[in-house]
Every structure is written in C-alpha cells, then in structure tokens.
Image (cartoon, rainbow, N blue to C red; front, side, top):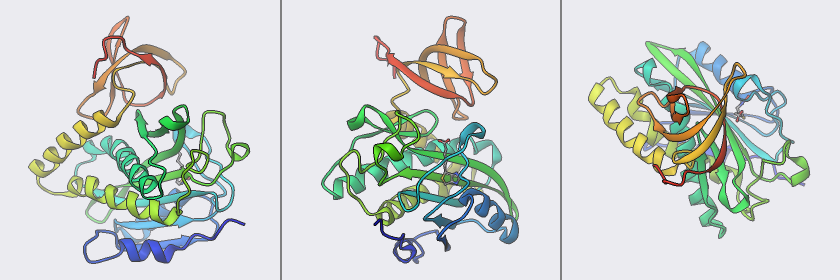
Amino acid sequence: MRSRFDSEIVRAGLVTSDQRWSGVEFHPAIGSTNDRARELATDTGQPWRIVLTDHQTGGRGRLGRSWQVPDRASIAVSVIVPIADPATAGWVPLLAGLALERAIGEVTHGAGASLHATLKWPNDVLIADDGNRKVSGILCELVHLDGGHGVVVGTGVNVHQTREELPVETATSLELCGARIRREDLVVAYLRHLARLLEPLGSDSDAVRSQALEGGRAAYVAACSTVGAMVRIHLPLGEIAEGCALGVDSSGALVLDTPQGRRTFAAGDVVHVRRHPGGLA
Ligand code: BTN
C-alpha cells in the first residue's frame, strides 16, 4: 500500500520566513493541478502558491497531450511564479527543468542512490543510470497576476511506478532506478531550487533579471545533454528537422546547425540521435 502524500511536510519545509512560498493546497484527487493553479491565479492574483495532489485524474502534458499516473505513485505539483517581463517566459520551463535536475541529484544522493540526471531540451529530466529514460515532465502556462504576469509551472515526477505502470518504454521512475525516496522531500528540494532560480525574474530591475538569466543559461547548458548532440526535432505542425544542437538562444529556443543552415526552434519534441563527433557545447 503506497502512503498518502503528507502536505504538512511540504508546508513546514517551504512556507517559512526564509522562503518565498506563501501557501500549500493539497487535494487527495483532482483533475489537473495546473488547472487548479490557473484558477487560483485568477481568483487571488497572487504568486508563490503551491497546488499538490495524490491522484491527478486529468493531467495535461506538453503539446496537447495527456499525462497519466496511478494514485500515490508520483508527484503532481503546480506553482505560480511572478515574472516582470513576459519576454522572459521562455526561460521558465528550462530553469524549472534545471531546478528538478538539481533536486533529483541531491535527494537521491541523500537516499544513497546518487542518480545522474540530465536535461533534454526543453525540460525533460532523463536518468542516465536507466538508459536516459524520462522521469518527469513540466508544463508551463502564462497567467495574469495582480499588477503583472505570472507562470504556472506544473511538474510531474515518476517516483514509485513499476515498469508496467508507465505509459511508454522510454519512461522510468526513481524507484525503478534504485532510489527509494519520500515524495515530500523531493518536492521541498525542487521548490527551493525553483524559487532561487526564478525569483530574480520577478524583479523590476532589468540588471537583476539579465544577470540571473545569464547565469541560468550557463547552468542550463552545462546540465543539458541535448547541446552538442545530433538531434531530430518533431515540430508541433508535423515537420521534422535534424541537425547538431549548437546551444540555446537568449529566449531559450534551441539552435540547430541543419543541412539547410542554422535554424532556431521555440517548441518541439527532441530525439537524441547521437553525440556530435566534434563535441560542440
Ligand atoms: C510533458 O508533457 O512532458 C509535461 C507533463 C506535465 C505534467 C504535470 S503533472 C502536474 C501538472 N498538472 C498537469 O495537468 N500537468 C502538469
């Protein structure tokens, strides 16, 4: 029997005087935590709220897909963060992936498993120890807040699933990779990293935002196994492009060196074909 999620642990770890988070809402079951967070953003106009569930019955994924998980097996969390300039919104999903990659490394290390997580652009977290299978997904949506803009960051992490409980062969769970962790500990570690990385994007100061983005971009590229790889990208309208991933531009879009020349992609599904022989980074 899998244990119930204890939102009090999350509240005690995050709604404190040294953290930005201001409230935690837990639902034993709900359609989509992203939908609930969007509703909260509209009703309150306030950022830094956290919505969690043990059983998400209508989870939504990127590019209009669904995200299905069994009861009490995974993390489903959505949060509202403020951004001062909507032009920086493209960086939020990438930095959220980076926050989760760091948290998985930390929490699995603490549990004696030390998994090696990497990022596939834009924000899939892959576990190198299990054939680079995907352990999480992140869906970001722009919302209006009092006096400005915000982003709902919705994150799903496969924690306890067995192979049979996963929807595709290319997915994995932390437990399948040998890490037996408490979901609550990973949520606390993830949202601490997330607040640290995203808080500067809510600043009124251009200098604070651009300095944070510069640092965030360097850290993201270092953690992203897409950069330097030969990739195939499936675009939302069905086109497929191939090339060597050269890096990410100032908006967070992926830059490929393709046979047709240098091309930039703001969205799409990436497949890693192989590392580029020249090892571009
Ligand atoms: C993906 O397609 O990779 C993104 C999946 C995002 C799933 C999470 S689970 C919590 C939040 N609520 C949703 O409805 N979706 C996101």
